[in-house]
Length: 502
Image 1 (cartoon, rainbow, N blue to C red):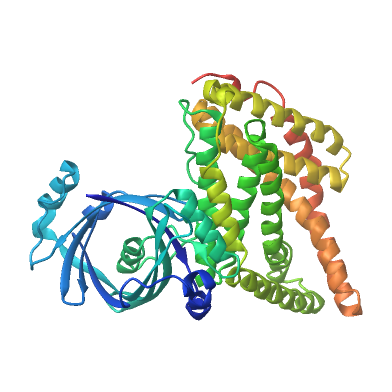
Image 2: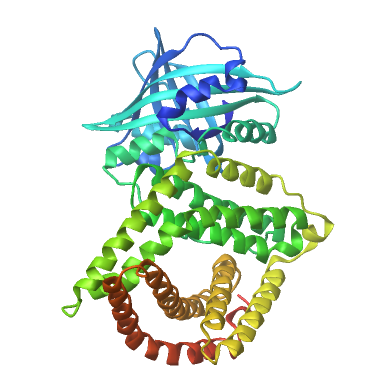
C-alpha cells in the first residue's frame, strides 16, 4: 500500500500553453514522454463502493494494464491524502493485494456485481520539480475528458504529487504557479466527477453544512476545521461558477468568504494578530470583487421582479429594469474575468496553507472550546444589544449595523451549535435568521432606491420608474420596519441557549 499525497488544481484549457511556458514548468525535467491514459471505473449498479468511499479502476498505460484501489480520501483546500493499492491487471480483479480488511472485504463481497460506470481518457505530461534539497514534487498535467453513456465532461487539471518534503512545499509551489496562472484548488477527484456524470446529476451550489466542531477540540483545532469548511464552500462554488452562469454559485462563494472572515474575527484571541489582520483584509477584497454582480441580482430579485409581476407595473419600471439588467450583465462579465484570471485561486491556496500550518500554544492546548464558545457568543450578543439600542430610532445606518451584528451572531451559533443543546440553539438560530431576513429587506430597499436613482438620473421617464419602485416598497417596508427592531430586541433579552449544558 502507498499513501498518495497530492494537491489538485483546476485549470482552464485555454491556459495550458501559458502553464507550459511558466519558468518553473518549462525548466523542469520531463519524466518520460507524455502518455495517453485510458481508465475505466467500476462499481455496483447501486454504487456501493462509492458509498463506502472506495474507488476501483483499471488503467491502460501503453501496453501495460493496472488495477488500482483507492480508499477514503481526506481532502481540504485541494490537498488530499488517501491509501492506494496498485497491481497488474490480467483480465480479472485481484483484491488479495489490498491489506485493509474492511476495504478488501467490501470489494470481494461486491465482486460479482461490478460493472463499468464511466471512463476517463486523458493525456498526462509529468515533470519533476526539486525546489530545494530534500524536496521532490511530480507535476502532472492531465488534459482529456470524462465519459459516461452519452455524456462528456472536459478534464483539465494539474496534480502536484509529493515524493519527498512536506505539505508546505506543495502549497508553496502551487502558490508560485497561481501567482500568474488561473489555477484554483479542486477538491473533486476524477472518480467523484465521473460518478456525478454517471448519475446525471447537475453540479449544485454548496451551502452551509453541519459544523465540524466537537467538545474534545481546542479552540485552535475547532477554528482550523471551521476555516477549512468555509474554504471548501468558497472553493467548490468557485469551481461551479467557472462552469455554470447561475448567480447562486457566486452568492455562495461570498457566503463562504463572509463565514471565513467571521470565523477569523470570532477566534482572533487564539490566532496570530498579523495573520488574522492580513486575511481579514484579503478575504474582504475577494468578496468585494464579486459584490457588484450579487448586489444587482438582489436588487432585481427583491425590488424589481415583484413589481414586474404586478398588474400596476408602469412602462417606466420596465425600461428601468432593462438598464439594471444591462448593468448586471456587465458586472457578471467582470466576475467572469476575475474567476478566469489569477488571484482567486492563489488566495485559496495561501489561506489553506496558512490554516493548515497554524500552531497552537500552551494556552490553546489547555483551553476548553465550550467555555471559549460561551464567552464569544455572549460578547457577540452584547454587541448586538448595543446596536439594537441605537437602531430603535429607525435610522437606516443603525438598522444596517444591527443586521450585521445579528449575522455575525448567527454564524457563530452555527459554528458552535454541536457544543450546546440542539433544540434551543436551532430555535434561536431560526429566529435570528428571520430577523436578519427582514432587516436585509429594509437594507435592500434603502440601498436599491439609491442605486435606481443613480441609474435614472439622466432620464425623466426612468426617474418616474425609480420613484414608483420607492413608493411601492415604501408601503410594504413600513410595517416591517415597525416590528422588526422590537422583535430583535426581544430575541436578545432573557437567557441565551448557550447558557445551558448538553
